[in-house]
Image 1: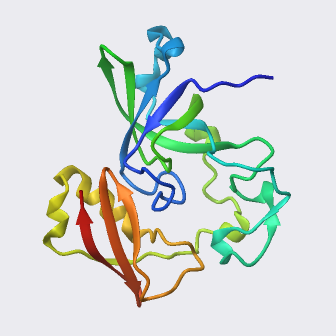
Image 2: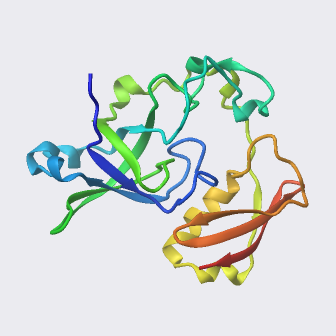
Length: 220
């Protein structure tokens, strides 16, 4: 079986660090650009009637798959079976994300673009397939989820001065949502360490101490 990408997702995240750990927890907007062979208008007929979509995408990983992995949620110390996690080190490096379809846009150069929110993907991620999200069968709010239980929270209070005005207003709330989710690995807790990641072309640097994330600088 041969699988090839059908599209590429463009997001504000240029690196893996800082990307939300799961889809649907921020309002960050991204767009999906179909590759030339799949810029067929008929292939998207009816998609505007869908509110949410499933994205199947390709992990950007190297090396062989691992039967057991160390989930960040467990502090990187305990091992779980790879099929009980969402680790990228899988036999087939395929990811799954649920996103909200915001709108479609017609581009003379790129064809139909799909604007979505809630993606947990790096800029340039290859999309393998797109399917509609069906709430009557895809939603199981009372389902057990093991070590990744819903009661696990690592939300932070974010302190950011007027430097946030350095970025466009439409990006400010999505950036704050990303920071509130705590971009650090779950096993990092050094109050003196300065962290940084790229967001929409801006370098964001911050520290975290006593449940408070303090933004130190935002530079283009």
